[in-house]
Image (cartoon, rainbow, N blue to C red; front, side, top):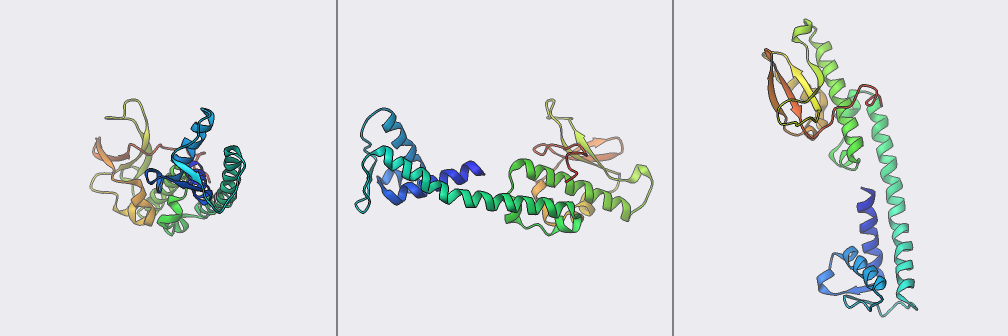
Length: 211
């Protein structure tokens, strides 16, 4: 996420002082990279020119200006994203009701590692709630587990053991908005029950999800 922000900011800063050929219209960051390449090769860039209303003494000065302006753009945005991440993690620690209210945009702003932790925590809380709401024998309870079976090739991922005659609907209801971020699970028969698993979501150990 940070890398993407920086690239967009550099592109915006470059467009403020440079006119790019049509080939780089809307891809200003690529134009900036080509400018750096031209400077390294000590040749005049042909894909861009300095705008008429600004004045620089050298291409080196142009790049310095772009880098400084870009930082002024992306740094506040990066800090805002960091604050958003902390807020979501704080909400996660507050319980399942907070998880259910997380909106799509806020969750999408998290990096992949944080998304994985939040999803693991939500699954653990949801399964625990389902088991408490429907107290039955140990054999008829849901269980969160790692899965490393078919097509995993030595990798492990997040999975849920579902007892016979049940599905994931109760867990989905508890997770609210977050359930859709798990994606469509795969299934494998385990004894009399079924394990639902998500190959692209790593299963975190219990101490990793204690947000």
